[in-house]
Image (cartoon, rainbow, N blue to C red; front, side, top):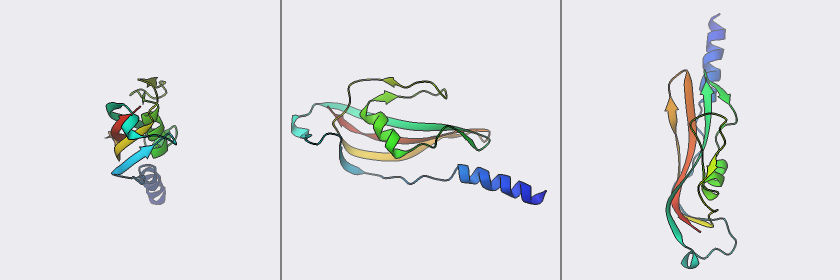
Length: 124
């Protein structure tokens, strides 16, 4: 019985393991010929990729930096409700400056929400 409890605790800890994160990237371009001098700034942008966990078990795929970047580029805004489709806020970005990537979310022990969050200055 004692070993089963250890296995359950170990599986929950593995589900909550930290993902590797990149921080403070100077420029990320999504267009081959993007010239910041010819682009229009749209201000601060944010992209998130989030996953819910119930009792340590993921409801969907783990959040990734790639999906957070794609949501930032396509200006998709997610929701707090699992499974709800993201809404688009504007046209796709061509360049993001001063990029920061971090983990976010919350942990209520029974239900957890893990997010990868990308922020920066967007240009179209």
